[in-house]
Image 1 (cartoon, rainbow, N blue to C red):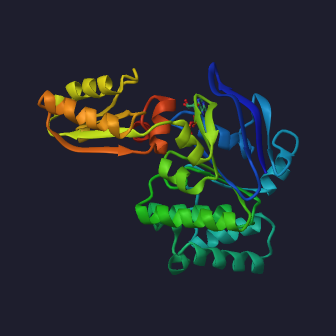
Image 2 (image 1 turned 90 degrees about the horizontal axis):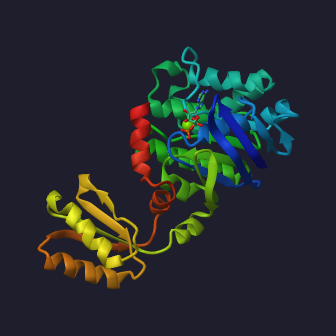
Image 3 (image 1 turned 60 degrees about the vertical axis):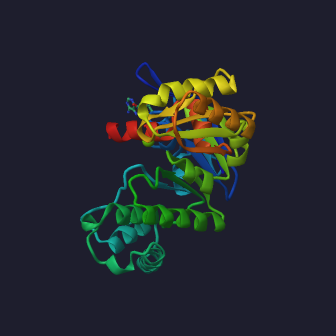
Length: 322
Ligand SMILES: Nc1ncnc2c1ncn2[C@@H]1O[C@H](COP(=O)(O)OP(=O)(O)O)[C@@H](O)[C@H]1O
Ligand SMILES: [Mg+2]
């Protein structure tokens, strides 16, 4: 349903996409995961015909964005990174208008609008101007707008960024329902938990290139081993503790230090044996430990390994940039 083949795109001398390829089969969710500036929105724009690739091609339901952009658009629903609702219109009018733009008659557009308002918990505010809505309500309305015409492929660019936990759960529910109806979804996200939960396949991108792909389970396995984390009592012990972890694993991979939470963590191929050694080493040098744990790799670890920074660091940078 989605085939992106070897797409490159530069802005001036800056290469935003560098031979990117992605595929998604019918009724699956492809999660596109990458730090700020990695090329997620550029990919979305090319797939949705808003931007032309310099080279390569992208297909939606078999139609090329270069050769048949109108057919691509007919098969596609998009919810962009920033919710695009018409603030002067009510929730109902927004959805009704989209239905009419897709060629539905008044009655069909109206029935579809009401159905979606219900599904997205917007019935109570159906006749309120969307300009008065909260971020979460706007997002829901925008998502509803993307699926008015029951497109075969839905593209969601960071659908839950800026939403509260309730809004995020709602959105996840919508995506799950879409997929159970056979819709194919491309979802970009900066939330690993979201990709983990929703995506059948995940492509991790950085600098406009796919640097890893697979199911969440496969990616976690590729991140290898278990991980040891310790939380210290004193910030002044952070670097000494990091050195101790480094020595105990002997892997040559630097520990990850989280100064805010007084945490130090490191990949530990030997699992609990390394944990025992670390605790005794720290004890021997008089570094008090508040918490210690051993855990399986998460997508966060995968992300850290692949991109060299933690997902929440990437997120913080993005927030600063925004
Ligand atoms: N229209 C543009 N002109 C110049 N640079 C752009 C433009 N759009 C995106 N970029 C740059 O391309 C890179 C990828 O951007 P984008 O696809 O928006 O990343 P993401 O959505 O992953 O944060 C960024 O470095 C961004 O600054
Ligand atoms: Mg983006």
